Image (cartoon, rainbow, N blue to C red):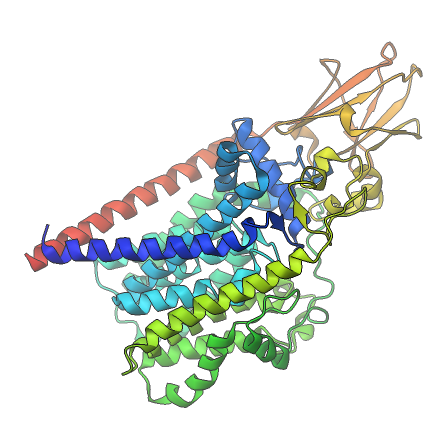
Length: 581
């Protein structure tokens, strides 16, 4: 191994150490206080984290329905919302046990991966270490990217953003690099999209749409168009196989059930981001509720770029233009309300495009900063970016310190969570948990009875029976409800548990299998056996065999792609070594 490769190795170690230190500081600000501040999706995602942890303890990676969380009514959150990124949390929690510490270590791992992937992806595209480093810092520490970890508590979108640089670097390598690096591009594009899909489906949809537009707009600059199409088709096929374990059950269930999807009724009207607000909040570098922004450094780049982009290289002009267009599209300048009731409304909030705008603007910023004659500028920008982000996080933490942690029996959405009230924040430990009553992914016909189900009301011939939490036993994809002293010999019993496709469920009473149906509100319904007054009603979701097979194939393909990527990197490094020997 020649001296140049050894030097590169030590430089990479130094970069990794710096990323690790930044990641530690990133979470230590909150971990030291031992609090989780309120977040837009905190209640929903804490329930998902608990479900992933309990499933992993049971020896499983995925579940189709929620039986340890979401008020334990069998909501099919795992079918419609991917949980691949939660496996890392489940592993950490299994080792550490403490939920708050586990969450912040999980966040730290995510931030480290985000910095490393951004750095490697940029280095593969530009072949410059300094530019890659500046890009990784600007992208990973932009306020909107950070907000997904804290004020939004959107774990899915946060982890999806980790792999955005990998996706776009892969696309660039496929279209514009040579031979072996094209294979690298195919692997990066496929794996990146797969990892995004297993974190946040909507982010994957937006990524694919933007990739299609980029392909069309760069078509005239591509030298080997036929070869590129072949490689992109191969990537698309491998991608579909790698995510089929989630997508196929998702689509099948969507087609066979009328599902209440996340709210899109207010698309283009409420929650919109105006340009003046974006600029003002960016200048403040704030991390505030419902005030997404790109941060002070990138907003400066937006204005600086206007004067310099016309004299720059085509690549620089293109990525700056992409960043500006996506920035504008994230605001109310675009009349999004005219696109309501069209497929585009699935994105819910146009400001979700900020992640992609930040990616392109960070790359443009890194290029012009590292090409500047003042060599110290890049060090200054990195230092300022880290200091600004940490200052913002400290202000956010101080806000959390001022919030009460008193919970009593009410909702916890607007309270800070610490070790004293965490157990009471999850629905499995409460008879009624208003913070866990999310109606997304319930059958539409169950919405009218959803509140009744969330507080666990059963019915025997229309007579209400409240089932307390100590009479509900949770298992992997199973729930057992205890109903006692039901003296009526013949009765129709309705249990607060959602049934989606009846053939996928098994119901037993005191160990004996029974026939059942779902009522008009998709609740479990059955005729009570005449000779039984005390019932243990166990409902099990049985994963279809085809789903198990598809999941195994998808997992196998992902592993093979990862192995292929590693071998391809060694091959490139070996060629690099021969070149310099």
